[in-house]
Length: 581
Image (tube, rainbow, N blue to C red):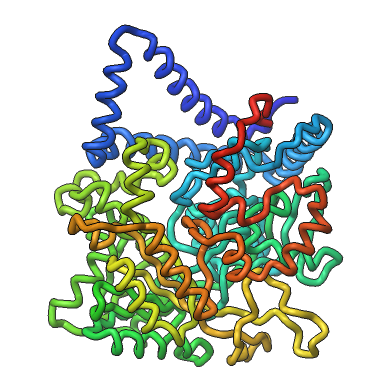
């Protein structure tokens, strides 16, 4: 059968990468090639910044152009819904062939580990049958029903470009252009307006899922497969392949007004942050709440509001305008951090909505500074600021073994979800164990999914919260939590002191469990199986595995995300007969 026209540009991109790899392998047969390879690896390791500037940035730009051309091609010439059905049919065919082969392997997607935003490499893919799920398209949207239907590999950049010009947005549109709908739904997605809307998965209307049997089902909160629908968030693709989702949309305005509130003590920062986070239902409540902690005592709290030109004139007449996305502008966290010491106090800025959503994208929060130390220099921004950021997937693809080891042993990427009431103590624990700044902080509603009459239990992967608040519009009960994000190199490493990443990580995980918290599983987890089953409620998930994956075609969540499980996968013999379907 001919490939769908929309898959052709993607196939060309993959073919170019494969051809480059084949040429490199062939070149290794020439005399002196091994020595050249050694020099190249040394350069990629010792001069990482220059390698990224001259090789990874151009490759990232080429890939972005390729996908932009592909999206235009789809919109102009092809019917996305019709092509969607054909792509799903092909995936089902691949699953049926795997079943007929009966080789004992588990199923996973063929998406390379280097293509994900997750910092780690998942070993289970080496030992599984990989199914190609090339589902990258926005399928439809309805202004009447206030929904948008998309395939799982649609990313936040695509959605913000598609929806905002129409006057709509997702209730929760997480930072970073390359984050995908599938990862945010079956994993976790959070943003600075989650104090109003919950997590990304709380705003999904329905999901189309391909089971290990090859059957395609659609599930939602009230239909015959409502139990599966509840089990999909945090399942990490272990119940089936996601084919499409329908997501709520909400009206939006052209701009966001950010109020920067520098705080000179942790107590002051926690107090102000808590005030704006808990006030999520009044007429003047902030639409977004974010804080960046720059040291144990210094923090900038940033409530923000949707606004248009009329709002600016009426409510924010003294606000300055700032187009954050201009290539020559300072990175956002540098811009906000500079307000701690300029003695100007609180102030407001009007920024375009998409600029706000992707304010940390150019600098990959603050990770890019460690890769390209000159990245925020005014001259670099002026001449090359338009080219950043490099794609995280290509940064992973070009890591040498030495860089990979450094990230594993001397680098931290963690997001921990803890009750808002534990914010001060949690900041102290992060200071003691990581001493890494900035820290990213945002609030979210942890919903209680049990019914008020007691007939329907919570049935969710996250334990039932101590819901002490009620949404006035929906009647849903919730408890306010926060996300603490630590990304970068700890102080001990910078000072050339001993740093045990596993021991520090386990200490933080232990604390988080003690306060009824959770760990985002895109990052490395050092939990044992028993600890993992204690942190997360597997009761409903296990029931759904029995119903929808009785022959264990997919691994369980622990086997996909935890370090202890990764060690298990590394010891398994690789299936030489395994096919990439």
